[in-house]
Image 1 (tube, helix red, strand yellow):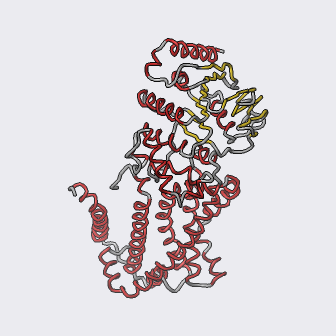
Image 2: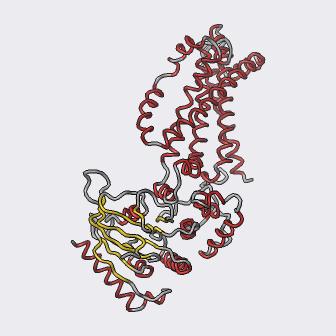
Image 3: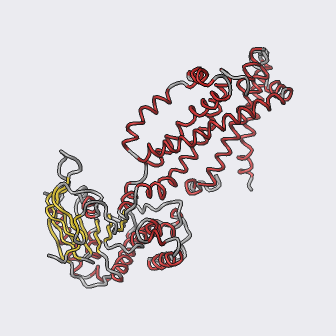
Length: 256
Length: 261
């Protein structure tokens, strides 16, 4: 372990600390009122003060997010496999997918509320809807960019489409898939929190909305921090899985 | 001729309706076990010829007959290797070589129960190309020449009747390339299979082939079929003999004419 790797391991913590210090300093220096922007120390204090409520709402948001995310993974892999392995399906489905992805998901929440009522279900669906697109695109890309020579080698051995998909397509798409999971899981948080903010009585989104209506800005920011931390943890989780399962794709920097 | 293994008659090819011809009236007869090289300027449809014979592409006109049957879809008895080794980076060298056995019948159904037998066979083949001890390395841990050797093994492990080589040695340095010529010649002399080799390298064609076909500019046509009766096995010394030098000269002048035309 050299000094350089120690430093690079510590650097995320250092940059976070610097950000918090800057934030704290600016708020104090310019006497920004707490109902506009609370200091990070006040936010952390609020987080500690309301820890029971935050814990309850945060675990709820986490479950909601992961549930929606799990549906997105299943749906995204199947749709990505279809789109990526057939040119006809790609041509037919691509404009629809792009159009669908361009619709602001927050605009859909009221629709889901009309269909499913207020609460967890619209949050799960919003998390799913917002996060499946990158999975579809990445899985499809991984499958569609198969080298034509390799396809020829396999076809001239009598390989079926399924053979090609399982022997080459899926293993080859794996790094793309994991890369998309990292992005998708953070998007899923965005989806569930949006929905909780608009239409729920539980979850971090609701907690923040309730707090802001009471001008409890430190608690609002405590909620934001909790969401950020959950996002980072999930991102890192999938990052580690990615590196373990697709070492061959990261060979340029074996310890990176 | 009834003893030809591959026979092309009046074959023409356009990639899609209304396109210019990629391949103009082409006739070819290849004996079983013959080593054929195809040389010609870039873009003359040499690679398309391989795809036609292996059934990956249907001809626009004419017929392609392999082993007595007209080719109607991808043949299942073909081994292929390209300039790019196209090994799978998540598989070890050994597992890469075993890949065709997971696909070709009857091996795919026997592989699981007779794994040891097949692994031994793959290891033996790897040893003949000088890759003993590299079985558990991943492709990206091998040099370009080693990857190409493994790619050759993958093309041959299922003992195909027909080997298609599309400039397999073009990306290698001169020494490695000539080493691989010998390896390929040895493999072929031990168990003769029919080879179609597409190449830009006239020395390579003269070194390896029984017959060298020279193709015209696009639309490709076969201009010359030159028999090459230099004794086998050919080695480094052969390349310094007068008949070899004359043959390369002759091929070179054909290519010069083609390019000038």
